[in-house]
Length: 124
Image: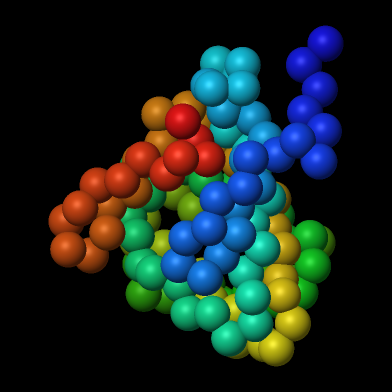
């Protein structure tokens, strides 16, 4: 039975955030990737253009988000759908750590402002 225990999540750190990887092709999921991200207070995210749709559900705290330059805020219980091809940035302007669950499809890549394309390790 494919159960991924919280204590067994693979942890990655990037740009001031902590990513807890659960479901991805490397853990047996064929189509979807799922992870929990923790964003410390005061962290300004790095804009990136998502290659596939992402769904972000805020579990704790509040985040400032930008989709193609349009700013918004999401808090605990809110869900943000980030369409494929959108430039996305997430910041935590508060003082407390915020957490969110994120899902996307396998094969996800992101493009940074300098044109570099990355495949984050938590979706591999």
